[in-house]
Length: 219
Image (cartoon, rainbow, N blue to C red):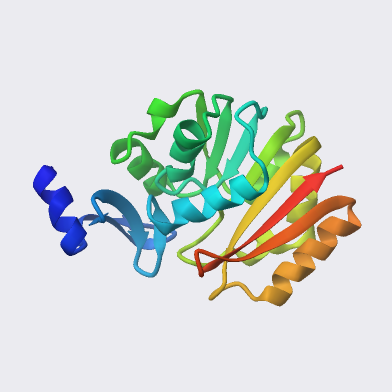
């Protein structure tokens, strides 16, 4: 293990691959001394993506005393690691992930269940948001990608309305997008819709030079 770690500082290398019915080939790679999860096109967990979402949470003034949190999109679970270890958050995390292979990787390769209390639900984020009625969340983090693309349905008013409904008063939303696959005009349209529904918003552009983050707060 130590040899793998040191070699990866000189030359990233692949440890193993998985085949996903949603994202195609998923790779466990060693980079800069740590294992990361990648798709064929982009980092999925424990690389630059972890830094991007950490920056978004810092900008939104995430507090360790926050209430229940909903995470849409699990990846390898690097955001959960960030919440627990960097921010000291110990509240309940409910994670919805459509891909059973991704859930398997998070559990078996990255041992994500050590970060309890944690509930992992294998479901489509859109279906989950539409059907969940009795629970409210202080934070919703939407990190929903198939490969490197946010599904179109996750950007539409119907889905955004469900997210608004699931937010508690004063709750916050962080929505992650990639610059190369998500047009700025579409992001601005999402922001305008949230503003029309009385949420305070702002966009963080070019986070780590690759991603745009939409932040919103329910009044």
